[in-house]
Image (cartoon, rainbow, N blue to C red; front, side, top):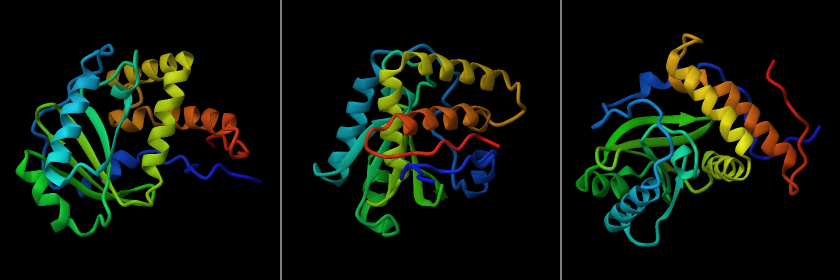
Length: 203
């Protein structure tokens, strides 16, 4: 049966598991989710320009995550995906980013994609660094586009975030909303006219 090329199996507890890969602490804690702030796109522009000043104007960089979705409830942290030619050649990209204020937070893999996560204090930012063939940034773009076009799923996701903050499932915040994220992806995959997808409900 066909699977969408961006499909990944549901992985409960994956955020808690990756905490052993943490190498530093954030400059600024994110705080709870809040209503959409129209200043978030401007904050992304500041981050984008900072990265380009550090690494060059040709960088492949994109605003992702909930702050990239107008009207979406979100923690006030700008999520950004950056693709670099060779993720493991950290000497080529990490020192210039550190020089402008970024700090390496995680050195790990997400759903099989090697990944580095950096943090910035102002604007409060998660900078996710990937290699050019990574699947996760493609998933992020699809998720943002789907939420922008589907207000009903924005509401479903916002409700999942509220439950996660209350700790009703006894899980870390990201893990507590992971099931809803998976289900939204399933709807996005099933509706994609370019790729067939046989639904894979969570077991």
